[in-house]
Length: 171
Image (tube, rainbow, N blue to C red; front, side, top):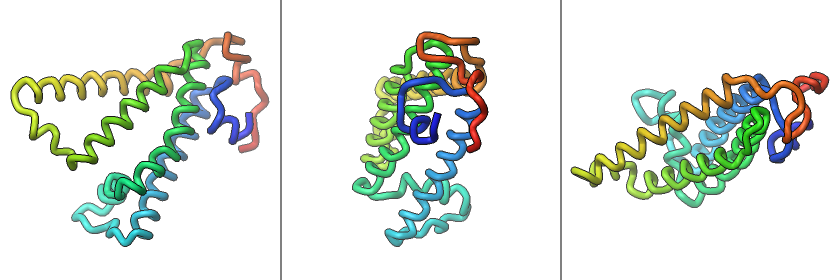
């Protein structure tokens, strides 16, 4: 499978090792591109007392008009990788798409109010918001375990041949 097929297609299967390498690479690219865009827009990337936390949070400080296309740029390949990993486990990939769609909506609403929603919701509303976030965290941990640590289906499955049967690519 070519890198373009791996990052932009939703057919086939990938191994855990390949998933980890691509996801880590995308995470590094996400931080680097966010920092470059922030610097290009004149935002001070290293303004806080902790430069690393500020650098890793650069994407959250982008204006909405820059953040939406930036996040969508990384959403597609991340979703494609997750779908292929689920398919390697002989599971349809649509739960990954739903998970990332919910994350995108949550991020949008957190950005709209500067993350202050938790403070605005007192009593039952705050408990509901906390409960939703805890469920979402549990699902995220489940996806991490499933995608990153559980082995795929041995041999061929309904989503294609085993990625272990393919010759190692020279990436």
